[in-house]
Amino acid sequence: MRHRKKTKKLGRTKSHRKATLRNLCSAIIHHQQIKTTLVKAKAAQSTIEKLITFGKKDTVAARRHVFKVLQSHQLVKKLFDEIIPTFADRSSGYTRIIKLGNRRGDGAELAILQLVGFEPVIVESKKTSEKKKKAGKEVKETKMAKEKTVVEEKEDKEPTVKEEKTAAKEKKKEEAEKESGKEVKEEKVKVEKTKEKKATKTTKNKEKKSSPQVKKNETDKKRNVKKEKTKK
Image (cartoon, rainbow, N blue to C red):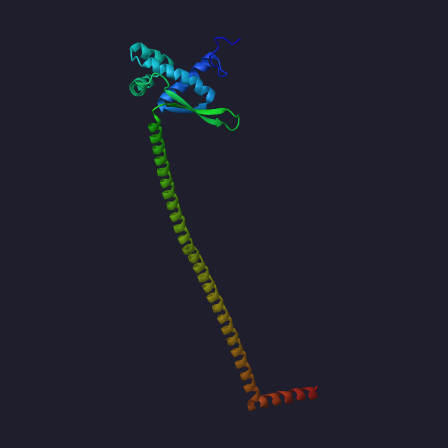
């Protein structure tokens, strides 16, 4: 029979279980609520409520007893100065457990362990987180706008660079065409000069042949050649 075995072992040794409960209680005091499994929430609920009831005495012994569990002077001060005065009218029921359903993966039951009367603090923290998120979104939007402007400027500059490149290529082509045109013109001039020279030579030869003195000299040469042959 399972008599006097009320403690939930949580699948841990004594030292490990003590450390987990200490961490859960310190997290509740610091954040006013935590999200954990249902079994851990029930285990931590009893310890945190015992600490609050014991801390209502507000003596040195009570502070030392709470410090023995929490091991933090800051958390002890926060518990005695901020949290315990709000529960002056309450004799018990300082916390509540809100079930959240099963967790994906291992199917463990999740729950929120929360201090009663500290809901506005949580709402304010949510509001601040929402403000931070909005500020982060605005910063991201400004960054995106700046990046877009930079990209647009680059796109505007790129066509100018392309135009400069195309203009340089066109200039090179024009220069090459001009040089080729000069070469062609020079070749044409040379051909024309050679034609003129040939034409002048032919005209000179015709003039020589057509002159009477040239004809007489040719006839004399022929006669002399015939006389030499007859003598032989």
